[in-house]
Length: 197
Length: 169
Image 1 (tube, chains in turn blue, brown):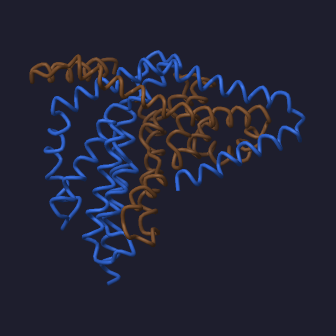
Image 2 (cartoon, chains in turn cyan, orange):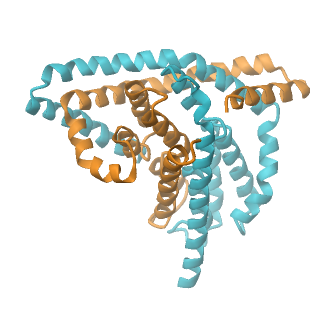
Image 3 (tube, one colour):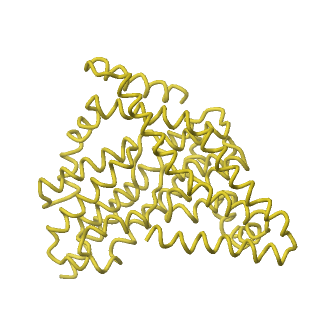
């Protein structure tokens, strides 16, 4: 779905620009913009490279020194409350998924989350609709809490920020609010559905 | 605030050293992984930055922002941050591209640049997540999952604005 909708979004962006350029008589500017944009992408990736590789290096140290395993153990009592009646296997995948999210290891978070979804699906008595636990997994991922938003900090340094990491505190605040709002709305929905049946 | 980054670096390195880990080798392994991420980011970045810069040059972006800005002005959201809010739920690489454009246009330390940073740091590619995770289940009817995820997103955007505008974080 992500890829499909981007087909339309990107396609529309290109076509709308060109139609608009013809109508406003800004064809030359728009053609130049194609190459400015492409050059901007190359500049950004070069500027990003150092900071990005630094952070992925640091996060690898965190992963191999057992910090991620420690966090997974620390959150397991919480998971029992967030995912009532879930099996051990499902909770293990969920712990990995959330920890990887927390540490910003996106490429580890997604496979763990997919395994968690599969495990929760097996426990879903009415598999046509997502169970409350599946909704909880999705909401915890769509409001993902990341301790150190590494790509973002690298992007900000690349753009010449005076203090690239100065956005961490507001991000923690906003993430805490969005996770809380998401969890509460899943819990409320759980109550409403029980009233239905 | 300026102690957060050094504290995180010091804590991770010190803890790994105490546990007698090969910090240097682990670091370089991880940094090599970063190159892979850069390679993943580059092609979509070309696509999105080109499209956004065409939208701006052709005047289409101004028309779009003029249409939406009365509503966002009322909420106190700078119109420059709007393109990010629009693309964020759909595409991670797309929103990196749009954020890059915003940071270079308005400056990383401007209000618009900071708000865009906080929004992209505290929200996720909601519809992409929904599609990926539900693809591993037998779920056919996804309506139940959408409102909760969207409520989380809206709360995150509102909280980003509150954190910067009223709490002075």
